[in-house]
Length: 498
Ligand SMILES: NC(=O)c1ccc[n+]([C@@H]2O[C@H](COP(=O)([O-])OP(=O)(O)OC[C@H]3O[C@@H](n4cnc5c(N)ncnc54)[C@H](O)[C@@H]3O)[C@@H](O)[C@H]2O)c1
Ligand SMILES: N[C@@H](CCC=O)C(=O)O
Image (cartoon, rainbow, N blue to C red; front, side):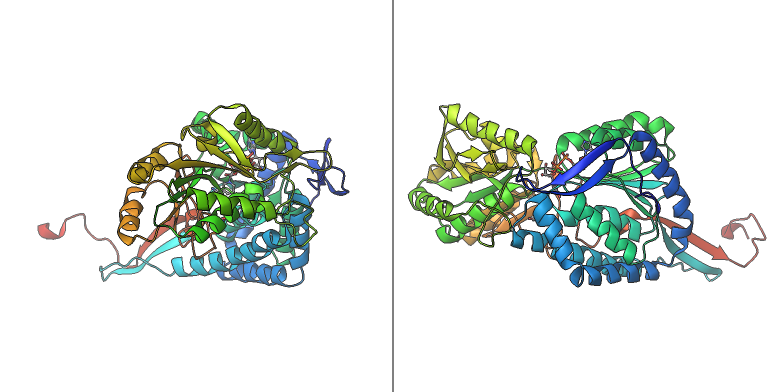
């Protein structure tokens, strides 16, 4: 949707359940580069009137949208997320209804709080001295991932709330739920052209927006290679740009659970299973590598295996399914490639799961691998699937594990440490300061909540702009300082010369 118009182009995209043979849910049409260009022009025109809408009226629209999402459209959001993205009932609810509503309400609140602060001038002749928060000059390109419906809504609509116009490219595999958000926001009063909803091939969209001199910002969540490519393209096109575009990118992770010999085994087992396997491990925060002490390993192993056996992998419409199919054929191929690596390597053994089947859908068993090599690709590369790799260390080496955890991957998204020894917890928390943007103590590495644990990581995990936090909304403004006096400037002399 560009402005109020629906455009139909050559390439038809069907949104289907990751269960291959299930019904088609909807048809979408991919935008060409010319259409993306047209959307840029429409956005720039819409910007003029959108900027004039008072912030207070925008907040009212956002709160109205949140009410619609909590009320009459809650089932639509949840159902499209379940069927389109293969989320179980509970995983859809915490994402597309709850988290999205929180993003809308808390960002409005934080923006309101953030805009209260004003600079002061001690000069008696200065009648106005203030900071005006403007939208960015140009347009914002919001590029969202498949795995959280709420993230798509946040990437597009938080910049819009702060006065920006946005081109929103949803992920190919989350189009239907994302379009549902778009329609609700229109019903809540957001005018056409403020956010244009543009399903398109990634490179077609990325290449076009990064060539535009009017690109003001990219708000991206997805994988490291995609963000690196966009960043490089912006750099190449910088000489033609009117701005230095603001680049916000939240990317991948290789999230860890580091367990001390004093840890509570039940918390470790339950936290690790939930973090590694909920939504098939397709959360950027999912635990993918675990470090367990030799002394606790027999008990942890027995319990992990017994819980893993109980996890039902099935249709998302069955309430007792713990997880379902992975998102698409490409993901299935990537994930099963890691399982084949685990089978082939002499340093790894599969201790649970390991089977997969794409005859009726892209199903992969929750898989636990034990390795003797803490630098194996299974311990260092983002898999984004239901595979947990475990390294068992001699208890005496617990402190060298801290250094290993901190240095063996290029990521720094989430991590968790488990221990009942408070002095070790204090020392490890300090030593692991830069290893994770979201750090957990005796809790799993997933499950951040908007406004409770603002989310994002550094190193190659992203620019750490903390979605769901106080600063996020203000990131989408270009502040202007205004000073006014009505007293004539009568002289060029400095005060000490008078
Ligand atoms: N840090 C976070 O907050 C966070 C949250 C969710 C997901 N993620 C990460 O996202 C990744 C999974 O999501 P994904 O598979 O959708 O990622 P992806 O990088 O494949 O795709 C993300 C988006 O970029 C688009 N895209 C692809 N190529 C493009 C190009 N050349 N130009 C412009 N856009 C392009 C895709 O179509 C999609 O909309 C994982 O790495 C995960 O860790 C991070
Ligand atoms: N908010 C989510 C992470 C989002 C990334 O996929 C969590 O903490 O589980």
